[in-house]
Amino acid sequence: MGISAIILAGGEGKRMKSDKPKALSPVLNMPMLRWVLNAVTGAGITNICVVTGYAKEYIEDYLAEYNNETKLDTQTAFQAERRGTGHAVMMCGDFLRANEGDVVVLNGDAPFIDSRTLSDSYSLHKEKASSATVISAKVGDPFGYGRIVRDESGNVSKIVEQKDADEEQAKISEVNSGCYWFSSVDLLGALDKLTDNNAGGEYYLTDTLGILLSQGKTVCAFTAENSNAVLGANDPSQLEQLNEIAKTLLSGKTN
Figure 1 (cartoon, one colour):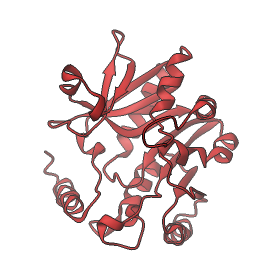
Figure 2 (figure 1 turned 135 degrees about the vertical axis):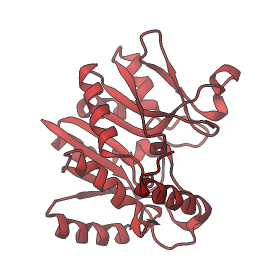
Figure 3 (figure 1 turned 45 degrees about the vertical axis):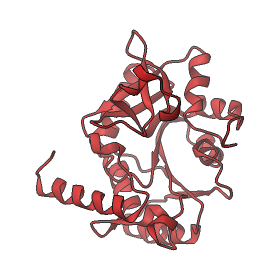
Figure 4 (figure 1 turned 180 degrees about the vertical axis):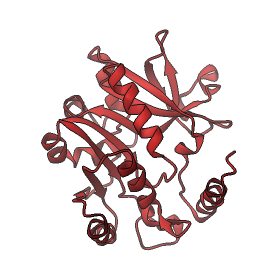
């Protein structure tokens, strides 16, 4: 048993005004997907599956070049219908069954997740013998993000989305990055129980946490020192913001 990674990269680039998948949009002339791949391999994880969707051939072509360059065997899984993050991970069932151990699930369009955060969060995941560990961050303006609600022991009791947050929950500054460590076996079991009984008719990966908690399993959260870990881009303006942040990071002038 070892550790592996699933990277979700099936999103469209329509709002980016591009015919390519969003994860291939560049930050400092490097696709956001490559930033995530570099963080993953920098943490010592080389067993990787990338979930494709919209215009999958672009991702497949990029990964063919990447594999040739790195001598890795990065795999892909195709999500034919966009039915939520949980559904995307379901497409990796064969990968999960072939790789018992622990798996980190990340977004291919969140370029500032870093190797140290992945390694340190995995250490907590093992220390707590968790079924799942959410990577969180504390931000100045949490609006729009899912809030991390902790119990008296400091473990996660639930994640509350912006639209569902009450007045007190809305004040919580610790938010979900969308990155998670899971026991592969426990994740597969939770995915089997996942339903699309919601307004969007989608399978949400966050719902697996509630399933695991209902089974009496431990779910914890690791708060990243790097608050930029939660950042992604949905349009050219946000992409430009990421580019400006990347320039600051590379110059050594951290916020």
